[in-house]
Length: 323
Length: 296
Image (cartoon, rainbow over all chains, first blue to last red):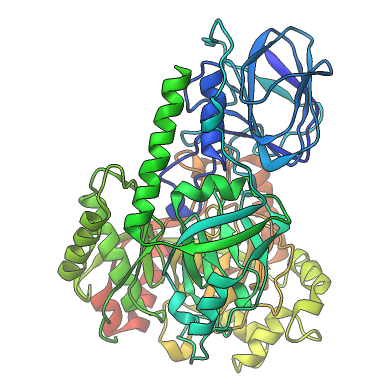
């Protein structure tokens, strides 16, 4: 059982829920940037939540199936097509041997997830099938898919006998204007008061530099304190002695163009981080497309934990609806 | 050694607790970080996912569904108090020898391509670094670079990349600014330097550190084909001690041959690093360390 990649799309990688426990040597969690959508796709086809699927940025691939399978497509809004005929998103559907799966144009969001019954069966590396591109680790040969690749599919499929669909109210909104909750901190004391209010009051525009490593935004320059730099930190006011970077942390090299690190994050470096996106909003960051507008909304730890509980409840509702 | 300042705790979202031990880099701050992290690993509570030591800071990734953030913070504060200035901390580690071809053709080709990103477009990186550190030429600079050991104070940025802190008094530490604008390309295994930190680029990619040379030995092997990587994909671990050794082009080609044949192995010896003894006599201590790697 396999899938032939006829066209890879722009950047399509094998991802599961990621690998944990290696960040201290620079290997980031990786895994689906929008975890909710990957979990939904897996549940739709009867897979365990941690099965590997495909994450496709901005454009869908063209895939040919060698055997019958059940598929589900979630995440960004793209119309899935089987031999040219439209199928619904967020709903399981069957394909036959020889069927060709393609996608329409992106209508909302940024990243599409494809689950196939049995899961993409590449070998596990350090406990995960996720692709970490910078380190050429995991996935299919440690890299995005290319035309001509053959994707192995697992055989222990338990595809549901009937069609499953994610209820409308559980599907994420894919707005072009986002409010992303952050906890201020880390090195935000290197901002002047004015720099801090500029950060929170600016409507930031996502640039095309938005990939699995990080999302870079354009807006105002942030004023940073002039100070005598500590030994080892480097000469720019935004430099610090190289420190670990939380996934979701926001750094501002030179005070311009903040970068939100995502799940293929560089694990540390010498730029001041001034805030961190709360875990509950990382899926929304993943689905923001270049050109979309983002405001960063400060919350405290308790509010972040409440947001986390709400997301966990939404995942529980998803499981109830699909199993 | 300066007195430890009060530790600063900051939430990195709801999954990370970031801890800064000092604003500036020093052996004292680094060993406090290592001592705290070592104790935390021993007492690792359920829900701790990643423990990441860095130069003068560390962070812990945890699962707040399993471990209360405030409980974790209290534990770290308790350990911090026990560790104190870490003056008596002993680190079980190893010293490793990294052969370097300085002024090699590959980093030279790359640095020439990115002269417009550099402070001094008319020099090479090593000539520039030698001049601003008051050496009388590239070879004297190389002698200083290879003359004393370095501590892998942090591993990261990308998989397996060591940040290296030179184990000499601050006056003798090599300091070179990073490129004015980062390069989009750096050969894999480039030996570089930025600020007070040396590094070895584990993979090819973007970078802003000055480029001095290249090592023939892989330090990251995702396929785990080489014997040094049979247990893990990264060679370096935080706390490793590194000795650079200058090699000729002939020796470089020989070692590359061993890499191709799959037989290459990085020379390494176990050692215990004792901060108190080091602080008392850094130069004498370093000489003894170098005997460990060279003695058989």
